[in-house]
Image (cartoon, rainbow, N blue to C red; front, top):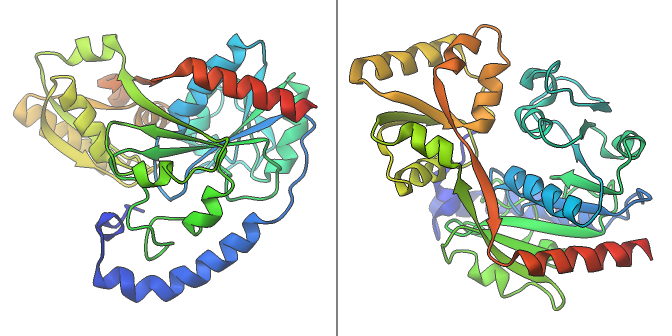
Length: 334
């Protein structure tokens, strides 16, 4: 689904009308958070967010994988495989599986790091350990109590923060904010905005708060410089993608926003091609969207004409994160 605009407004009549449903949903979710999960036998680092939609979890997981490797660890990602038809547990093969099989994010990550997809997260622990995992990177699942977490690292958008701070469907939160804050070990605020400052101020003593930014790949920027483009994206926050393009000096003439994990159709592609041909525009999208297009036999030819806009996550204080991870992993092993 596409996120309702009222989730990110201070107050609205619709949000107030939905508040009783949000209170019921939130009470169930808060009680569920209190359950004790299965110990994996190796440290588990969960990368999650407080609300529905995108906040930058996938770039965070990939950046953490690089840091963990530099610390001498062997990380393996464990994902639910949202959007994929296979329940697992199975190891994602980027050459054999498609986004329809395992989901777009696991497929994208599997190019650089081992990924296990398992609809039941506890069932994915043994395959991850069989791959030699010294640390499991749990992609999402912060609100799921099935697997015990040694570190819960939450990603939040600096421009949007927690939105109206109401629980779904009245707002974007998956559970009441206080219940989630009490279980947060580290908070990563992505982007320069101040909307998450209130949340950051309430991270408990001993927790870590970091700023980070998405850094565009030089080759992606060079491929688009001096060209007028039609940008399209089916992610949690397409507007952030469009802003990132413009911040790099790219002339975004046309925008097309789709819902998160949108399954592109022949009609979608035909409309994008028509706009690009009519106005002389280059087509650009995110790596996640391109993963879905490339793995569709009927859309693969179209994907070849689309420029991917690759980004990596850079932490403002990576040494502090490295120290925090090393200490918490050592504690977990003790």
